[in-house]
Length: 227
Image (cartoon, rainbow, N blue to C red; front, side, top):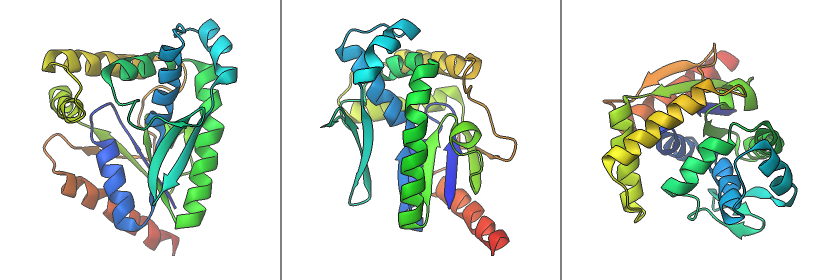
């Protein structure tokens, strides 16, 4: 079974997807982390976030995902960068390079391969991102589209940055969130949007447990319909 959770930054996708995967015995695939890995490559090589910059850089960039005790780790050219990609700077670059067709094309096959392999191995996978239900897995069994108030999303993201030792202010993170929203929705390639068959979940006032319960309930209903 494949479960997709899409939505804007800070809506709770990653936290909920991880928890849903644990509860169901599935594994979790964070597609955004894969974009962040390529963004880190751009930053390390001082490459511009343009089609020309991607054309020069991408042939030497290899992103892969491995699971260690069912925990997803992201590798860039063989190095584990799971921690290094979680910074404001990398996030901003990821927003820029995710609009490039060559970047999306490079990751699409890997996302589908990993998702298919892990779903078969574990009985299911929970995938989160911006276009997992519309582009990556358009035939997913369950599709969720998460939304939340921008200020609440900024508060959550700021807490995450502070836990990681990243220095940022609420105003900086809110600006980052609002810019990312606009970039994600307006880009020509795979824009952020709700799939027609996705169920919307507003997480502004919900606890993580409530979010997880909602998704698990949708999975149970899907299983009943498939039986």
